[in-house]
Structures are given as C-alpha cells and as structure tokens.
Image (tube, rainbow, N blue to C red):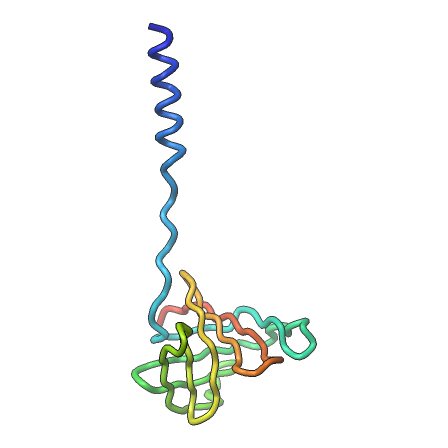
Length: 124
C-alpha cells in the first residue's frame, strides 16, 4: 500500500511539473498607440536614455509621432513582409524592421548603426 502512495505522489508531481503557464500571444498588429520605453544600440553601441515622452500612433494607414504631447510628425505608413521579416515604411523612405513581442514592438532602422527602439502598447 505504501508503494502505491509513493507512486501516486510521484505521478502527481510529474503531472503538475509538466503543466506550464502559457506564454502571452505575440502581438500581430501595429495599430494603436505606442510609448517609447527603451533605446539600444545606435552608433556608439550604448543606446540612449529616454528623456522625454515619445508616443507613436498607427491608425488605418496614418502614422503620427508625439513628443511630450506635441505632434512632431505625421505621414502614411505601410507594413509588409520581406524575406520573413516585417518591414515598416514610414513616408517614402524611412524603413524599420519590426519585431512583435507579447506586449511591445521593437523597431530597428534599416542601416548598420541604427538604434533599436522598444515601444510598449498604451491604451487609448
């Protein structure tokens, strides 16, 4: 009888350890309001501190950049896949590679010494 209890306990430990918390699903849409959280890389490799409130809004095909609540730039945008990578084009020439995570988008400029900017989703 003691062997059965030991086997039962071993089975329960194995069963519960096999269960894992589900990862949050990846974001798949750029639509919405995003706030700059982190800047990495850049020419120096050191990144840059985030010293002001920068937000971008993607709505329909329109892009807007706000710095400390003031609209700095407005243009159109297009998101497409090229060689299994998401490429965001703002206006006619600004291109970024886009990586989606469960709670952020990561934009990397399409040049060798570009900064990598992480934006978190903001409800609006």
